[in-house]
Length: 428
Image (cartoon, rainbow, N blue to C red; front, top):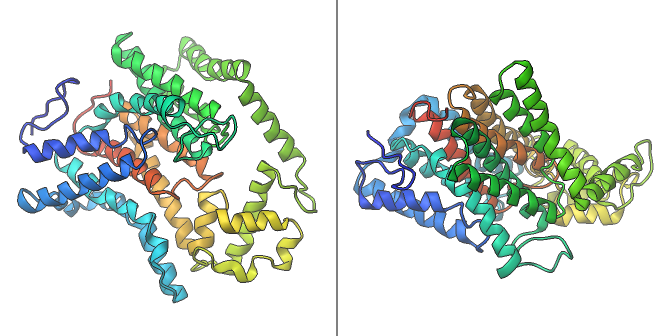
């Protein structure tokens, strides 16, 4: 099937109906206003799914692509959270619909992925233009239209806390950095390179202004990955690699007071934590360390099927946890979760909850790594996004809201299809 890949005429298959072109436009627009307009991605994604289902009934069966056994690991990505909840409830003999509410958004990936794969859409081409718009509109919205003053001087919008706003902006900003560097190396300064460079700087600025450390450990690793992949193993290439890795970090450290203060707080709180015994203070980092210790204990008491959302109340204040945690920290974890996707899902749904988190990261990360040479651009964008999400998953619940799940489903499934669909190497 022939594709139009001119960046201004769109990325539409020639042999498609008007309805299918509308669906493709909606999928491309779905991420754009996620960080700037309330409920945008939810409404657009639901509309897209309804149109995909209608088109599948009246025109062609997109879901036939799943007859390809090679797609099974990717299909399981969209099912594993749902299945972990079901098996956990089955083992506990407790069936609560509320536990499915947010996680059902993973199921949206099934029709999204099928539709994009059926038409062999190179979603990475769309994302190269859409990603910078996500953070640019986020900055406009958080500065002029719906800024939130509930968090002091930490920048965010009314419908998202600064922690999530910061690491999501950084995740998108790192994808923009990939496009900016690759486009500059291919053809010099271009509109796409400039737009993505602006997108990266805006995403970085939002992350710093949000006061969030979440996701930041991924930054040097993404820089290192870009440097290793892009620069040849020569003396000149190694110099470029070192400069790419060191200069941005030095500039941020020198120019951002917020970054220096947050890093200093992190070091001080880790060093002052009572590692050898005693009750930890209720500081930001100290509480997160204690959350892990609490989670390990609660998980050990019901490892196979977990406790559900609030089932561990019967052991919340057990003698074992009184030795190292305050009542405030235990109550905080009980009502606001453990600030870790891994810990929260392990306590909620046992080993299958832990496996679900592992699967949704391991499958795409491994796939993108194995395609770094053949599909450099799409693979690097996917890894930049997922490495930031992975880093964030150890200090917050990254899949605790419908919007974050839907955004990740659209971005990751789209980039996977860009490589899987066999469009050839469009990255170099």
